[in-house]
Each structure stands twice: as C-alpha cells, then as structure tokens.
Length: 246
Image 1 (cartoon, rainbow, N blue to C red):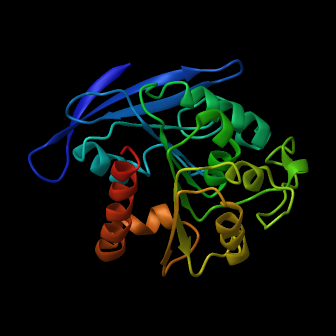
Image 2 (tube, rainbow, N blue to C red; image 1 turned 45 degrees about the horizontal axis):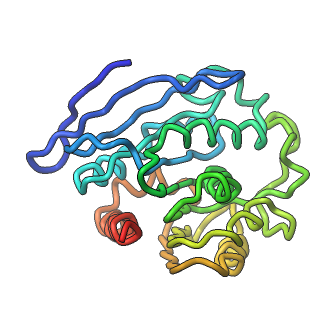
C-alpha cells in the first residue's frame, strides 16, 4: 500500500492510495481516490471487458469527483491490469463476486454511487440488491443472458443484447435511486435496444436521464479529450452524486 498526492485542475490535490483486494481466488489491484476531507469512498467504478481495461482509465472522472468532495474506489478485475488471473478464464459469475468484494470496501455510512462501463454496467445492475446504490451511472451498458454466467471469456461468450432473462434487467427492476445512462450513437458493440431496455426495466428508479455522445463504444478512451462532451458528462455525474445524498 502506498499513497500519492496528485495535482488536478486548480490548487487542490487528490490523494490516491493503491492497494490490493484479496478474494478467495485472486488479488485485485485497486486505488482509493480521496476527497480533501479523506472520507471513506462512496463511489465505485466497474470497468469493462478487454485486455486494455484498467482502473486508471476512469481517473479523469474520479479526480473530478474528489475535488467535489466525493471519495471513490476503482479496481481491476482478475485478468486485467495489475490483478492476478487470466482474462480468458474469467467469467461473469467470478466478476460479480469480485464486484461485491470491492463493494465491501465502500463507506457504510451512505448508500454508494455505482458506475459501470460496458460489461461493468451489466455487473453494476446485477449487484443492485447487494450494494443498494443510491445512484447508477452506466456507460454504454452491456447486458448478457442468464446462461452466460459461467462461460469463460476465452470461449464463445454471448454478445451484448436485450435478452429478456438478463440478470442486469432483473437487478435494475429493483433499483430505486437515480439512473444516468451515457450511450454512444455509433456503438459497434452494444445495440441501442439494450439502452432502451435498461431504461424500460428501471421502473422504480427515482429519476432517469439519458445522454447520447457522438462516438463509438470505447467511450472512456474518447471522452477525456473532448472538452464539451466531457464537461456535460461530468456535470451530470456531479449532480447525480450530490443530489442523491439528500
């Protein structure tokens, strides 16, 4: 475990602490990004599927939230980044367990904000009952069928789709907080019908908002360099993170 103080926009410093989350099978590389007052994290980000997915890609967003007073946690699933394991051997069921292990590191004083990108959004929705988020932020949210839970990623994992039996849709039907979905108009991985299904199934949500971005599926690679769209998304996330604590 080690701590670094990293400069962000303006005079403030973001204090970041790197550590490992130990699960039954693996060691997951993680980072806590602290707000100035040093509170325990109440925000977590779940990254997507792919060899290049890491906990660092979302720091542009988490550093901004830290400056707004919200500490957060970002980590790498087994088989990604500095975590142990082999990506091709991982499964949705294993990643769900790892999501809950990370969720156990969040503050117990307030319901969390759970953010997910692509497969991470599927996992965020699947763990609604356990994590009880006050807000969900889903980037290009994927959804997988129930029978895909134990398919190794190196095999023929089902493509994202609006499957009626998806555990993600079952989870989000029980979600009663604020929902923010960020979609990509040129998404080559997740069909627009999946986003429609997320919004339709979120029947108990306190609020729902959809932002469309003029980009492809890999939104976290694109967004940090786009000042206008980035500020639109950051403002929406700041609002949902702050408003949902009231």
